Image (cartoon, rainbow, N blue to C red; front, side):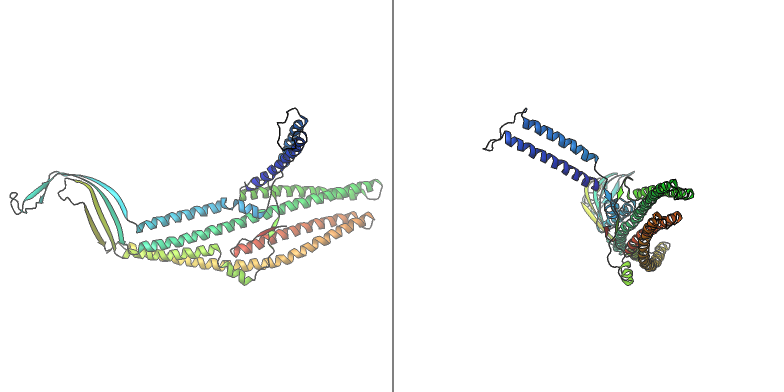
Amino acid sequence: MTFGVIAMTDLFSTVFTRVIIVINVSSCFVSLKEVPCSGKIRRMNRSSPASLLAVFALTFALIGSASVFADVPPTRLGLSDLYATTVEGSDRVRTRSAEKLQVEEVKSQGNSAFLPQISGVATYLKSDQPGLTLGSGGGTGGTGGSNSAASFSDTQKTLKLTGKEYLFNGGREYAYLSRTNRLLEAKDAQLAGSRQQYYLDLANAYYDTLLKQAEVVHATTELRLYDEQITELRSRVSIGRSRSSDLLTAEASRAGSAGTLRAAESALSTSRLNLANVARIAPNFELREESPSETPLATLEEYIQLGGQRPDLIAARKNRDAASEDIAYQRGGHFPTVDLTGNYYVHREGVANPSKWDATVTLAVPIFSGGLTQSAVRQSAAVLLATEVETGRLERTNQSDIRALYQNLLNSEIELKAFREAVELAQKSYDQTRKDYRYGLTTNLDLLNSLKTLTEAKRNYDQAKYRHFLERIQIEVAAGRIPPTRAT
């Protein structure tokens, strides 16, 4: 969408410029024909030459703008463009975002433990006979007795508000909240890691497509050079300067090159579809080559130190801390709980006690739960041990990966330099062999071999170049950062 907006902005600016030019030209004619020296503009006659010229010029501008619409080239996308416009919509990032949202809601649920629970309650009680309660006189005789009895209805109706607040819950609410905070921090790290992993996946598909494009270009160039050589051989055979077998050999090589071109085009089509699938874009795109910024390579120790703060390692450590907090949460089941419950009676009917409110403090001491609490504590301890082992494994693996990537990157720099020199020498060799061939100093077979050597050298160089770019990105991602790119 961003690229479409940019293209349309350029388009309308072009059209607008044309219209402004037309208006300026028209106004010039109007000023010559219709505008007096005082500067006041009179109404222009529709049949005047100036008005007709203005209409004609405006029509020309609109027709020209139509060609602008037809000639808008497709936007060329670089790796940075693809990443910036598609990262938040990737499946991996969206999944991690949804997981983070789940943990945020779990944290909100944990915060509710610190707030009172208030509910409205309505009850209706029906008994088989009325009950008795002691009256204010205290007697059972009459109203003047010391123990008078009062009756209440066999039907009771109550409407009340009930509030409950946990005063102490064994510290479980604090452990629960702390554990949830650690899990939320882990999800934040996993979300950052998913963005880096998406960048790595995108870079793999991006450079693979560029490599396939380069192979198509090399195959096309090789085919064109074969055609030139075959054309020259046909003229040489016709005058007897070359053998017919030389022409057949060149045509056979040309047929093989045509097959290589078809295979390269098929591989390019597959690679483009893969990139379109990773980035979730239409496959009719054009790519702009970008390479990782050629900043000096840091030392191995610096990369290992940076790798210790990689998002997946941070997430593993936070999960380990959350497992530790879960032990405290489960252990809180051994402690007593204290809660306060209060009732406010909005309406009471058929009840002798006319009080408007009451409150109850409840102390509950766990005595025996069949070993459930202690089993939960042991289970949490086992989870903590597993997360500690996994965290240690990830840290060792990350260091090993960084060491291997660093060594591969150093080797690829040497390899890339060697292949670049090979291309230069192969190009010089082909040019010289072709020149010598025209003077009869080399054979047709020498020229064919020289062309194959040149094409193979270019392919090897491109493979080494894009592999080097990708290895630089891999070591930067292993160090927990996304490298900047530049157009090449």
